[in-house]
Image (cartoon, rainbow, N blue to C red):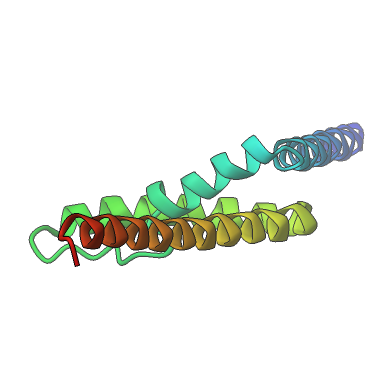
Length: 125
């Protein structure tokens, strides 16, 4: 009977430690995503390193596909964790990145227009 009681007590302690670790991780994710630099860093991991938004298939080598799928799996786990524990910050991250992308498009168009005007001015037309 003492072994059963000891086993249950150990299980409760293990469960409590796991829950504490889970809560600590959740707090850490919220802390990281509460800063603009943390949100940019996570987006970088998700977008460029994680193959989250791109194909991971490699025609040449199935081992490369497996490697990329492993990276993608990690990116999906990070994305899901962020969505679960910091949904507002996750949406803010997406909004910031979409706005930054739109700003780059607008700036590129303005640069192209300016170059076109310069080239037209240089032709004497």
